Length: 439
Image 1: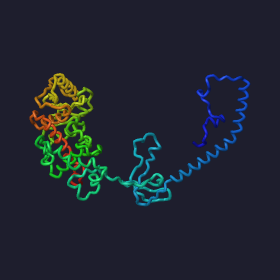
Image 2 (image 1 turned 120 degrees about the vertical axis):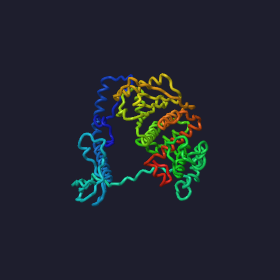
Image 3 (image 1 turned 30 degrees about the vertical axis):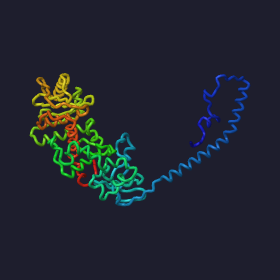
Image 4 (image 1 turned 180 degrees about the vertical axis):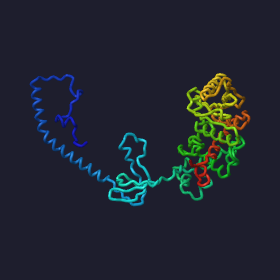
């Protein structure tokens, strides 16, 4: 790119000839070959001096353009005393490692400026002298991330300008109908709970919601379940260590399989509720670790089983969720499969539980595994909903023979969604302040 000539041409005075360029039948006598060599060498020698001048001109032009580009891209940043700046992490460039360290450190406050250097003061009062200003850049505080707005029906008309165009402008006409009227029927027609009363009839674990919050949750579920909320990466709820995005809530709607994040978050809520109301404690094992235990793999879970009355975990095998309830002090396990338990699965659960308890230092000579009568799943995708309902009934000491019709399962799905939204302690504050679905 600099000399505009290939390296082979600069060395030999001609372009390279590759084997495929030579004919298969190429015959020539020695006399002609010698003449060609002399003529070729002579022509190359004549051209080398001229080519050298062209090369020097090309190199000079390229060097000039490079210097001009570097001068135009040079930093012309000014700093002032008292300004907050970030300092380049030069240490990571002077030693091995440091790839995971941040590129800039700070913020620092400029205490003095002397030419091309500055004195900095950190937040804890440490002083750094004679820092090159080429290693500094202005500090811009990050604004908190506000996810996409999901305006409720009550506040769409009065003041907000952005939500108005989608309902009137031609390009937004396809999504407009589901935003205004159609989303309400799928949630309100089968079970009335989301709009009129909290979903407590099926699950006492769900808290009683205020009217405004219930309307907001209903609007959120209408948009997510109705498919009008296209951004799948908006954080809607955070339960303990589990973050639930709009895509996770979309998988709770009827006809979908529950994701592991939803399973673990709801189990986390149920066990916390149990521990608040009982002196004897319960413990949850997340689905990933419980599946390792089910496969008889070495468990990395640090737990003393004798400190808990009940340990709850849900296993995923071939996209099917099954509940395992361990009673360490009673030396027994309850195994529940929404499609029905086979003797092979009960035996497998017994062996997996005994191996896990043995690894935690418990005596398992008289350990047993059993099952109880329960409701049977009627469809092929609600195994996660039934597993959560089984765990909820066991923790609250309720009958496991609950209704399993399509309407009842839909109500259970609605209850799981509304509970996960209402129990999000960090992000639910926005439901009161701004009309949006936030994370």
